[in-house]
Amino acid sequence: MSVDHQLPATPRAPKHGSWVDDTDHPAGTIATITGRSLQPNSGIPLDVHWVQEMRANTSAIERRVQSQVARRSVKKEWQAAWLLRAITCMDLTTLSSDDTDDRVRRLCAKAQRPIQNDLVRKLGVEELEVKVAAVCVYHTFIETALHALEGSGVRVAAVSAGFPAGLSPLAERVAEIRRSVEAGAHEIDVVITRGYVFSGRWQALYDEVAAFKQACGNAHMKVILGTGDLLTLRNVARASLVAMMAGADFIKTSTGKESTNATLHVGLVMTRAIREYALQTGMRVGFKAAGGLRTAKQSTDWLAMMKEELGLPWTRAELFRFGASSLLGDIERQLEHHATGRYSAEYRHPIA
View 1 (spheres, rainbow, N blue to C red):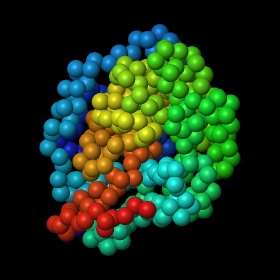
View 2: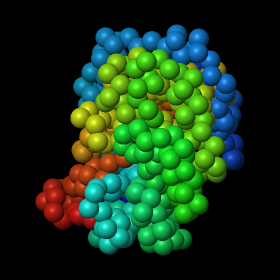
View 3: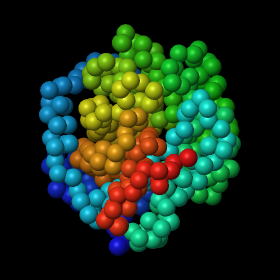
View 4: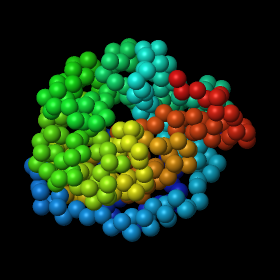
């Protein structure tokens, strides 16, 4: 059965106002807002007053998320199209203490062919050449990943800046970023000092992220907030805004090492901060949900939230990512059910 890879309109279509633009954009334009083309984020001077004004209505957020997950899921070819889109937004990741070159090479092979060949044929999507957005590794394995992915179009991301705690001296973290960029990483995932958020040291947080941005050069910088450690949704909102002011290309929920990682609650807070920043500055910032994402249903919940809160451009890899390798296995199982009417065992869909 042929599946349209373009993300379809669904019963979840937004009614949030004229700022949402789901139309095609002019050539070279990734996203628009209220008819205005959004530019890459170059950052702005720190506006402490704006940061301090940021609030998060917890009860309203809980109601919004509850209504999100309670809706009926999309089915049949619509579901297959959303799941294919989810795959193209994935950063396949291996960040274990026992990582090896062979494991990274296997992950890179999976990144280039995330769906088994026979399933691709059954779905009738050979021409789409579905692949993931990036492979995320430690600095040590950048060269291995670059060689394995050469010519594929899949990007190499490296975690840096004292990942996952972010507590090493700033000079060391900046040097680590520069080494990863020099090694050829296309994207750098940095982690902030959470203590700056707890103490309201917004200038220190801004200066830290700005230093990371300068060290990244032309590499895209994804700023990990560690939302599971930030304790309150207001802290998440404020940290999101400061990171964007300092030049973040993406803001990212978690390292995947916290006890609580990506949740729709923090996702809603962060996406609305992205929307406000875009409206005020005319600059676009991407979003990455990382950690704790394991089911195909979760992927469609997140994509629907992106579509409703920010518009269709934030359902594409340029502005949205999943940081979850285990998610791919369940998506493959759902796609196989769509193609054959049967669920397969998990072991038939290995990652690495």
